[in-house]
Image (cartoon, rainbow, N blue to C red; front, top):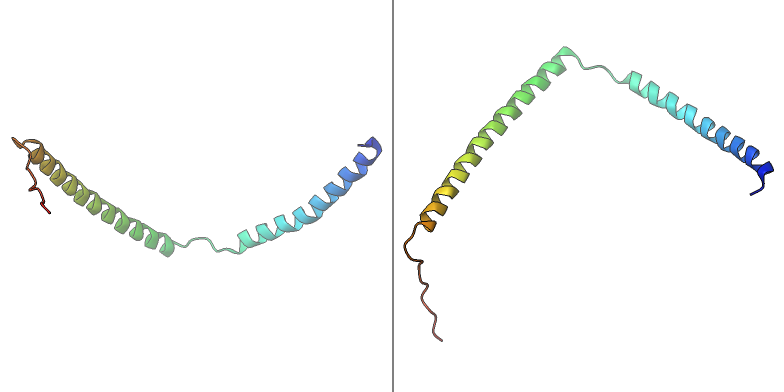
Length: 92
């Protein structure tokens, strides 16, 4: 590539990036400033919602532990059988 053309191309790219980037950054900052901060009522509502979610997850974990205990019990019973159950043969 010709070295004489590199500087004008770099300048044009810089101008394009700045002409698009500066308005985008300004718009993003204005949008962030317009969003209201969370009030104390919103924070209390969020903490109550988190408490309910925590209680639901705790109850699900207890039920899951009960299911796995039952599965271990059934597996132990099946493994402790003296001889396996023979299925009847099907004659056609």
